[in-house]
Length: 252
Image 1 (tube, rainbow, N blue to C red):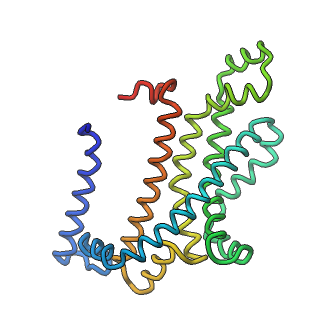
Image 2: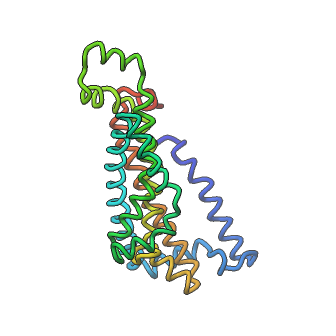
Image 3: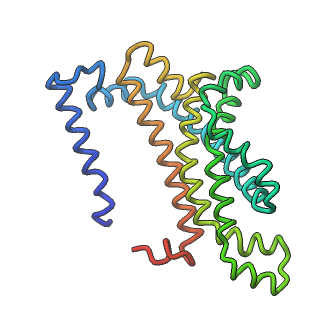
């Protein structure tokens, strides 16, 4: 395995050691910042609840993310088809990105009730815009010389879309999918603050009980879910782009 793959562990180890030193030396009280050993203890003592909550959060985030990926790609393709559709509906996509999800989450609870449906919708709302924007920008940036070539050969619109525009837009689309992968977990956690359950519910309860160690444990699990999502997208991107795109084909 390459040495460069281990480089991110160096700052991680430094941060862990520094946290442990600051808490043990009483420079920072443990009710503000728990030591890594206290966080590890919370993992072991509350492992059943934490892993169950992580499963709930992961499932909600995954379902919402799959929904946002499907709908975002579809909307991006539709918006790219004609300018008037983009001008008419793209501002509403921006609206969903700019409205704080925590402000509309109570409305979603009223409309859809407590539990997973509201959390999935929160996830979808938070994570859909980068996919729409990246798909639209990727298709719009298709090489005009290639577009003219397809016109010369009288290619049908669907042929142009699937054999030129979408392949050309794939690198940009994967950028949006990576961004949305992290946002999906954020949306799920925010939804759980309001609708209950999952890691968001554990964080909310731990906050009230002043269990900062449990908060950190839940946050680390949420981050792990996001990393798994991003790793999955990177794996798909490597398979989709490795035979033709320079970013993968000539990667060292």
